[in-house]
Length: 266
Image: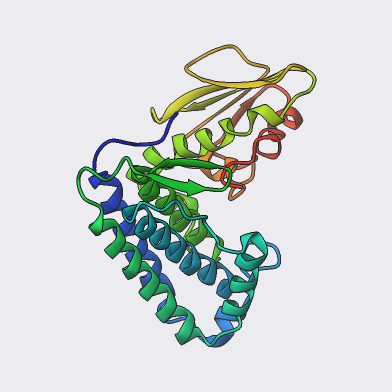
Protein backbone atom coordinates (compact mmCIF):
# COMPACT_ATOMS: atom_id res chain seq x y z
CA UNK A 1 0.00 0.00 0.00
CA UNK A 2 2.98 2.26 -0.52
CA UNK A 3 3.17 5.40 -2.62
CA UNK A 4 3.50 5.36 -6.40
CA UNK A 5 7.10 5.90 -7.36
CA UNK A 6 9.72 5.57 -10.04
CA UNK A 7 8.18 7.00 -13.22
CA UNK A 8 5.84 9.65 -14.55
CA UNK A 9 2.28 8.66 -13.52
CA UNK A 10 0.61 9.47 -16.83
CA UNK A 11 -2.74 7.86 -16.03
CA UNK A 12 -3.10 9.76 -12.77
CA UNK A 13 -2.09 13.06 -14.34
CA UNK A 14 -4.77 12.60 -17.01
CA UNK A 15 -7.33 11.90 -14.29
CA UNK A 16 -6.25 15.04 -12.40
CA UNK A 17 -6.78 17.12 -15.55
CA UNK A 18 -10.22 15.55 -16.12
CA UNK A 19 -11.31 15.97 -12.48
CA UNK A 20 -10.12 19.57 -12.41
CA UNK A 21 -11.94 20.40 -15.64
CA UNK A 22 -15.13 18.78 -14.31
CA UNK A 23 -14.87 20.78 -11.08
CA UNK A 24 -14.31 24.10 -12.84
CA UNK A 25 -17.21 23.41 -15.20
CA UNK A 26 -19.48 22.63 -12.24
CA UNK A 27 -18.75 25.86 -10.38
CA UNK A 28 -18.09 28.40 -13.13
CA UNK A 29 -21.53 30.02 -12.87
CA UNK A 30 -21.86 30.16 -9.08
CA UNK A 31 -23.11 33.53 -7.85
CA UNK A 32 -21.84 35.34 -4.76
CA UNK A 33 -24.88 34.08 -2.85
CA UNK A 34 -24.34 30.49 -3.98
CA UNK A 35 -20.67 30.72 -3.07
CA UNK A 36 -21.55 31.79 0.47
CA UNK A 37 -24.11 28.98 0.89
CA UNK A 38 -23.19 26.08 3.21
CA UNK A 39 -21.28 23.16 1.78
CA UNK A 40 -21.66 19.61 3.06
CA UNK A 41 -18.68 20.18 5.37
CA UNK A 42 -19.68 21.52 8.80
CA UNK A 43 -18.82 25.20 9.18
CA UNK A 44 -17.62 25.62 5.61
CA UNK A 45 -19.32 27.43 2.75
CA UNK A 46 -18.70 26.51 -0.87
CA UNK A 47 -16.24 29.37 -0.90
CA UNK A 48 -14.29 27.68 1.89
CA UNK A 49 -14.12 24.41 -0.06
CA UNK A 50 -12.92 26.08 -3.26
CA UNK A 51 -10.44 28.29 -1.42
CA UNK A 52 -9.08 25.16 0.24
CA UNK A 53 -8.66 23.47 -3.14
CA UNK A 54 -6.84 26.53 -4.49
CA UNK A 55 -4.46 26.66 -1.55
CA UNK A 56 -3.95 22.90 -1.80
CA UNK A 57 -2.92 23.32 -5.45
CA UNK A 58 -0.53 26.12 -4.50
CA UNK A 59 0.90 23.97 -1.72
CA UNK A 60 1.63 21.12 -4.10
CA UNK A 61 3.09 23.49 -6.69
CA UNK A 62 5.37 25.14 -4.11
CA UNK A 63 6.58 21.79 -2.80
CA UNK A 64 7.23 20.48 -6.30
CA UNK A 65 9.09 23.65 -7.27
CA UNK A 66 11.12 23.31 -4.08
CA UNK A 67 11.87 19.64 -4.71
CA UNK A 68 13.22 20.47 -8.16
CA UNK A 69 15.58 22.93 -6.44
CA UNK A 70 16.60 20.27 -3.94
CA UNK A 71 14.50 21.74 -1.10
CA UNK A 72 12.02 19.87 1.10
CA UNK A 73 9.26 22.37 1.91
CA UNK A 74 6.44 21.98 4.42
CA UNK A 75 2.89 21.66 3.05
CA UNK A 76 1.75 24.93 4.63
CA UNK A 77 4.34 27.49 5.81
CA UNK A 78 3.13 28.70 9.19
CA UNK A 79 1.36 25.42 9.91
CA UNK A 80 -2.30 24.63 10.34
CA UNK A 81 -3.16 28.05 11.73
CA UNK A 82 -1.84 29.82 8.65
CA UNK A 83 -3.62 27.33 6.38
CA UNK A 84 -6.95 27.87 8.13
CA UNK A 85 -6.54 31.66 8.04
CA UNK A 86 -5.86 31.61 4.29
CA UNK A 87 -8.97 29.52 3.67
CA UNK A 88 -11.12 31.73 5.90
CA UNK A 89 -10.03 34.96 4.21
CA UNK A 90 -10.30 33.38 0.77
CA UNK A 91 -13.89 32.30 1.37
CA UNK A 92 -14.98 35.91 1.95
CA UNK A 93 -14.06 37.03 -1.59
CA UNK A 94 -16.54 37.58 -4.43
CA UNK A 95 -17.32 34.47 -6.46
CA UNK A 96 -15.44 35.68 -9.52
CA UNK A 97 -12.23 36.07 -7.49
CA UNK A 98 -12.57 32.62 -5.94
CA UNK A 99 -13.15 31.05 -9.36
CA UNK A 100 -10.19 32.87 -10.94
CA UNK A 101 -8.01 31.75 -8.03
CA UNK A 102 -9.19 28.16 -8.44
CA UNK A 103 -8.34 28.13 -12.15
CA UNK A 104 -5.02 29.94 -11.78
CA UNK A 105 -3.81 27.71 -8.95
CA UNK A 106 -4.76 24.61 -10.96
CA UNK A 107 -2.80 25.94 -13.93
CA UNK A 108 0.21 26.58 -11.72
CA UNK A 109 0.06 23.02 -10.42
CA UNK A 110 -0.26 21.59 -13.93
CA UNK A 111 2.83 23.58 -14.93
CA UNK A 112 4.70 22.22 -11.91
CA UNK A 113 3.76 18.63 -12.77
CA UNK A 114 4.94 19.16 -16.35
CA UNK A 115 8.27 20.53 -15.11
CA UNK A 116 9.19 17.31 -13.32
CA UNK A 117 11.76 15.47 -15.47
CA UNK A 118 11.36 11.78 -16.19
CA UNK A 119 14.13 10.99 -13.71
CA UNK A 120 12.78 13.35 -11.03
CA UNK A 121 9.67 11.57 -9.81
CA UNK A 122 11.51 9.82 -6.98
CA UNK A 123 12.59 13.08 -5.37
CA UNK A 124 10.98 13.53 -1.93
CA UNK A 125 8.01 15.75 -1.15
CA UNK A 126 6.81 16.54 2.36
CA UNK A 127 3.34 15.77 3.73
CA UNK A 128 2.15 16.28 7.30
CA UNK A 129 4.36 14.01 9.38
CA UNK A 130 5.91 12.08 6.49
CA UNK A 131 7.63 12.26 3.14
CA UNK A 132 6.93 10.41 -0.11
CA UNK A 133 8.17 10.51 -3.72
CA UNK A 134 6.97 13.26 -6.04
CA UNK A 135 5.10 10.56 -7.96
CA UNK A 136 2.64 10.43 -5.01
CA UNK A 137 1.50 14.02 -5.54
CA UNK A 138 -0.82 13.59 -8.54
CA UNK A 139 -2.87 10.91 -6.77
CA UNK A 140 -3.07 12.96 -3.56
CA UNK A 141 -4.32 15.94 -5.58
CA UNK A 142 -6.77 13.78 -7.53
CA UNK A 143 -8.40 12.56 -4.33
CA UNK A 144 -8.64 16.11 -2.97
CA UNK A 145 -10.43 17.33 -6.09
CA UNK A 146 -12.74 14.33 -6.46
CA UNK A 147 -13.84 14.16 -2.83
CA UNK A 148 -14.25 17.91 -2.30
CA UNK A 149 -16.25 18.21 -5.52
CA UNK A 150 -18.88 16.13 -3.71
CA UNK A 151 -18.64 18.40 -0.66
CA UNK A 152 -19.84 21.43 -2.64
CA UNK A 153 -23.41 20.12 -2.63
CA UNK A 154 -24.12 21.16 -6.22
CA UNK A 155 -25.31 17.83 -7.62
CA UNK A 156 -22.01 15.98 -8.00
CA UNK A 157 -22.15 12.81 -5.89
CA UNK A 158 -19.97 9.74 -5.20
CA UNK A 159 -21.83 7.83 -7.93
CA UNK A 160 -20.39 10.38 -10.38
CA UNK A 161 -16.82 9.30 -9.62
CA UNK A 162 -15.30 7.54 -12.62
CA UNK A 163 -14.15 3.94 -12.47
CA UNK A 164 -10.58 5.16 -12.99
CA UNK A 165 -10.89 7.52 -10.02
CA UNK A 166 -12.26 4.84 -7.69
CA UNK A 167 -9.67 2.28 -8.81
CA UNK A 168 -6.93 4.60 -7.53
CA UNK A 169 -8.68 6.50 -4.74
CA UNK A 170 -10.01 3.49 -2.80
CA UNK A 171 -6.57 1.91 -2.20
CA UNK A 172 -5.28 5.42 -1.45
CA UNK A 173 -7.94 5.85 1.25
CA UNK A 174 -7.11 2.44 2.75
CA UNK A 175 -3.41 3.36 2.76
CA UNK A 176 -4.34 6.56 4.60
CA UNK A 177 -6.19 4.45 7.16
CA UNK A 178 -3.18 2.16 7.45
CA UNK A 179 -0.99 5.07 8.55
CA UNK A 180 -3.26 5.43 11.60
CA UNK A 181 -3.14 1.83 12.84
CA UNK A 182 -0.45 2.58 15.40
CA UNK A 183 -2.82 4.93 17.22
CA UNK A 184 -5.79 2.53 17.48
CA UNK A 185 -6.02 -0.10 20.22
CA UNK A 186 -8.93 -1.70 22.02
CA UNK A 187 -11.12 -4.74 22.42
CA UNK A 188 -10.56 -7.18 19.58
CA UNK A 189 -12.67 -6.36 16.55
CA UNK A 190 -12.21 -6.93 12.84
CA UNK A 191 -13.74 -5.65 9.61
CA UNK A 192 -13.62 -7.10 6.12
CA UNK A 193 -14.04 -4.59 3.29
CA UNK A 194 -15.06 -6.27 0.03
CA UNK A 195 -15.46 -4.20 -3.13
CA UNK A 196 -17.76 -6.43 -5.17
CA UNK A 197 -16.64 -4.89 -8.48
CA UNK A 198 -13.09 -6.12 -8.01
CA UNK A 199 -11.59 -2.89 -6.62
CA UNK A 200 -10.06 -4.74 -3.66
CA UNK A 201 -10.54 -6.54 -0.35
CA UNK A 202 -9.00 -5.68 3.00
CA UNK A 203 -9.01 -7.01 6.56
CA UNK A 204 -8.74 -4.44 9.35
CA UNK A 205 -8.05 -5.85 12.81
CA UNK A 206 -7.96 -4.03 16.16
CA UNK A 207 -6.55 -5.59 19.35
CA UNK A 208 -5.32 -4.34 22.70
CA UNK A 209 -1.78 -4.51 21.31
CA UNK A 210 -2.47 -2.54 18.14
CA UNK A 211 -4.09 -2.67 14.72
CA UNK A 212 -3.29 -3.95 11.27
CA UNK A 213 -4.60 -3.75 7.71
CA UNK A 214 -3.90 -6.49 5.20
CA UNK A 215 -5.10 -7.16 1.66
CA UNK A 216 -7.26 -10.12 0.71
CA UNK A 217 -10.24 -12.12 1.86
CA UNK A 218 -10.54 -13.27 5.47
CA UNK A 219 -13.12 -14.00 8.19
CA UNK A 220 -14.06 -10.94 10.24
CA UNK A 221 -16.56 -9.80 12.87
CA UNK A 222 -18.08 -7.33 10.42
CA UNK A 223 -18.24 -7.55 6.64
CA UNK A 224 -19.01 -4.50 4.50
CA UNK A 225 -19.69 -5.37 0.86
CA UNK A 226 -20.56 -3.17 -2.09
CA UNK A 227 -19.24 -1.35 -5.15
CA UNK A 228 -15.83 0.25 -4.66
CA UNK A 229 -17.14 3.78 -5.14
CA UNK A 230 -19.81 3.30 -2.48
CA UNK A 231 -17.27 1.88 -0.02
CA UNK A 232 -15.01 4.85 -0.75
CA UNK A 233 -17.90 7.26 -0.20
CA UNK A 234 -18.71 5.62 3.14
CA UNK A 235 -15.11 5.46 4.36
CA UNK A 236 -14.62 9.15 3.60
CA UNK A 237 -17.88 10.16 5.28
CA UNK A 238 -19.60 11.16 2.03
CA UNK A 239 -22.16 8.33 2.20
CA UNK A 240 -24.00 6.71 5.11
CA UNK A 241 -23.63 3.05 6.01
CA UNK A 242 -27.31 2.45 5.29
CA UNK A 243 -26.97 3.34 1.61
CA UNK A 244 -28.76 0.64 -0.39
CA UNK A 245 -25.70 -0.59 -2.28
CA UNK A 246 -23.82 -1.56 0.90
CA UNK A 247 -24.39 -4.94 2.55
CA UNK A 248 -23.37 -5.31 6.19
CA UNK A 249 -22.87 -8.74 7.73
CA UNK A 250 -22.44 -8.65 11.50
CA UNK A 251 -23.14 -5.95 14.05
CA UNK A 252 -23.96 -2.67 12.29
CA UNK A 253 -22.89 -0.57 15.24
CA UNK A 254 -19.44 -2.15 15.23
CA UNK A 255 -19.29 -1.87 11.45
CA UNK A 256 -20.05 1.85 11.65
CA UNK A 257 -17.03 2.44 13.90
CA UNK A 258 -14.49 1.82 11.14
CA UNK A 259 -14.30 5.30 9.55
CA UNK A 260 -14.32 6.90 13.00
CA UNK A 261 -11.40 4.82 14.26
CA UNK A 262 -9.28 5.06 11.11
CA UNK A 263 -10.45 8.26 9.39
CA UNK A 264 -9.03 8.29 5.86
CA UNK A 265 -7.90 11.56 4.32
CA UNK A 266 -8.08 13.33 7.68
